[in-house]
Image 1 (tube, protein in one colour):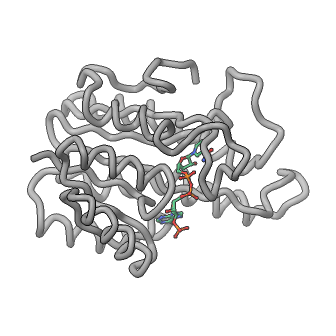
Image 2 (cartoon, rainbow, N blue to C red):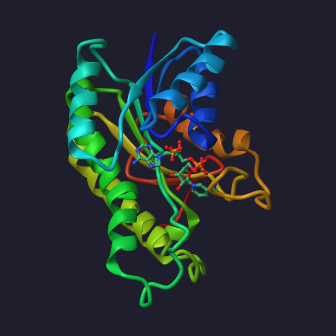
Length: 230
Ligand SMILES: NC(=O)c1ccc[n+]([C@@H]2O[C@H](COP(=O)([O-])OP(=O)(O)OC[C@H]3O[C@@H](n4cnc5c(N)ncnc54)[C@H](OP(=O)(O)O)[C@@H]3O)[C@@H](O)[C@H]2O)c1
């Protein structure tokens, strides 16, 4: 049975991704920073008959990530899929020149350094045929006419795209595929009620990258299971 760890998966796209991978026969590890919320989500998932467990981990904190990685290494010998899904979009994130550096620092620490921190900490559990999927956003694109909203968030996803490309190159020799997935604008706490897409649709591309996409695909960005430009 393959194992997938999804960060920030007690709700939203991460939770739905875990559910869909669980239905495909994966053992899924829900992860988040709040133990009680995780327990609740895990219970719901297990009631659906999904093989799941949970791992408390705050992706913005080195110590928390290290402790979580050490704990998981005692439970499993191989991590087949890591989905770096956890992210924040701060309410104060409105104007890059008018807000203090704190918003940018905090956002980048979670959304860009988080995936690096987590990938590094869990790397010893990954080997040939493992897959890392970073959840990015159209807001991070340098080639589409997007931007002008939540600048710290958009910049953090641009950085994540660069990180994806560089991690892919670094891990090519080990046979580990690293790609980014764009869920589109999805109805979640982050996306809001006006978003046109369901969580099922948002989870579609990460699930495909985790399970069906050719292992040889690496260093790319996908939306609706098709490669898009950065
Ligand atoms: N929704 C959209 O329209 C949209 C569009 C493009 C990209 N995305 C991306 O899709 C991914 C999922 O977003 P979503 O819409 O599902 O958002 P969401 O409903 O707000 O869920 C985000 C998840 O990340 C967790 N999280 C935040 N900071 C964390 C940390 N430091 N450590 C661990 N977990 C943390 C949250 O946990 P707490 O409950 O503890 O905060 C929550 O479980 C994100 O990467 C987002 O940027 C979303």
